[in-house]
Image 1 (cartoon, rainbow, N blue to C red):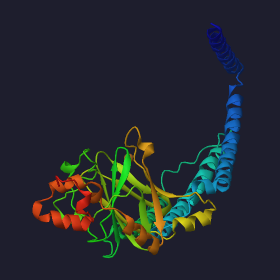
Image 2: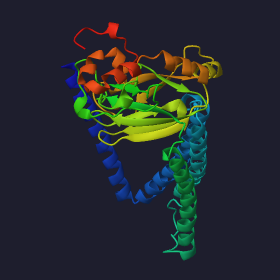
Image 3: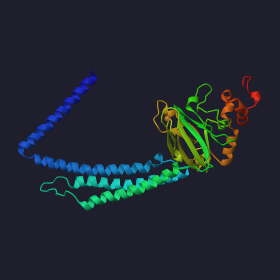
Image 4: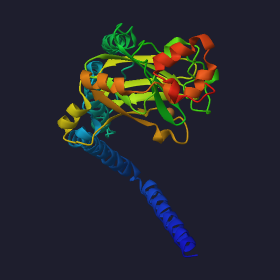
Length: 354
Ligand SMILES: [Cu+2]
């Protein structure tokens, strides 16, 4: 009840103010002093233009300066240095243009406000000016676009033959990674029809392909430092996006259309921990595509190792087939022995049915 009274009170007050304003205006018209009111309001608006400009630009520069570290991350990959440089060059050029055009916009509003006895000049066009502001931005954009495309081609181009290949698959709502085993260094085939929840053939690994026998699917991703890594990216259900902010890696994971991204990490987890002085820091992959209800939970720990640590970690991993020996049944009888050898499965570990 009390709220209703307040609302009615506010409405009445607004109505009274409006009526007073109308009466004032009408009195001015009758007296013939309405022109003065117009020129007063022009002066006020002109002054406000300058205040908004100075306060707005001042706040922008102050905020950018004080909170700079909050919006920047250390970079830990080779191409990341390059894309960061492209970003800052683009930001500098567009930033300078932004500041100049905004100063002009507000300054002109102030300077050319209506004044008694002043008339606007009739100035319909200027070919030279039109040409200039078409050609100069075009050249700048083409140059920026050229360097951007070059970087893009480099990132999405063919990886070197000795690159470390890792498969990343996004699904609602997590990331799964698969490595080619150390025996053949080749990822086995997969088929979405083989995905099941029986024992967790999360990837749809095709066990009729010999290359799959030693593939392993760890719960966190490890990378060697200073070595090219090729991520083969796919999605099991909807669009996801691989995002490794420190390595400046971002690529959509698209169902039915594998994508890839090659990069070289330049700092181990330990090196970045030392750099930022946080012993608990870990790299991660998150999802940069709003992919559903639990999108926020798509976070996978990434460990960047030295080459020795990476090799050691790799040699300790158990092949997926060894952890899921039930799938031996699906392997053609003549390949089963090979599968056991490649996956390191001892007969004593199996039950009689296999
Ligand atoms: Cu996602």
